[in-house]
Image (cartoon, rainbow, N blue to C red; front, side, top):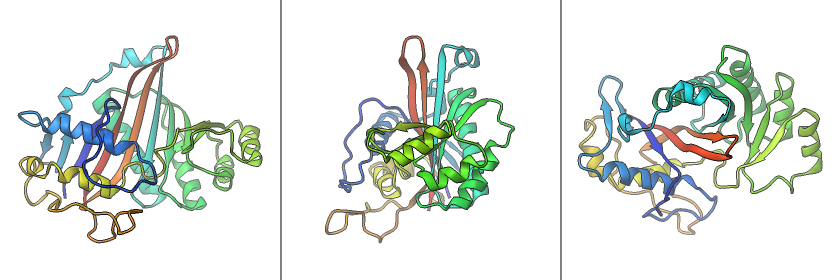
Length: 286
């Protein structure tokens, strides 16, 4: 079962070739499409396969810009990271995913000293799991992280987390926060929780498995030459839309499953410019 790490920038999104549902809006598939073309259209393909761990990294790690510790520890720079867990699991597995995601970011991008880390769990995860997970990741042992926040939480679950430790911020998948209920904004304000708007296009599943399956299908011949046949996902056909076009069909199932998606942003405070921004997608053949 091959594990995939895919790195994507935010420049020049490329429209996907296959049909996908119009809603919910998803910003990441066109960016991943561009990243795959940039890496896999090159001769030879820019990718690295590690047989010992059955890990495929796209593009080749040596082509990624890795920041130095001194550069990122300067007071001028602010590093914000979002870790959205997609694969349904337990509080312990979610905490392990966050740890692995941040380890990957440090290893391949050099971003280890982090100002804010926002975390999100799969949609409809219950409050007790959230509280156990939140207690685990905020209980200490992360001196390189200044503050923790959350993604896409409403008041009932936020109230559970506040009893442990109030998040510094909660980002919502909306274009702005001005239309939120006053009771909700008042609750957040009373606990010192900043409310951020993502602008839409993210949510709890920023890269649906069917989207990733169809993106990889376009490059199945190249991928077939990068990993052993026993590890390669089955990408013989795309996942089509349902008859009404509102969703992907339930069968066949995607040949890949997304574990987590990281978004990282390195911002210069004094110049108010983004020095680096991108995504990391972790997935495995299903």
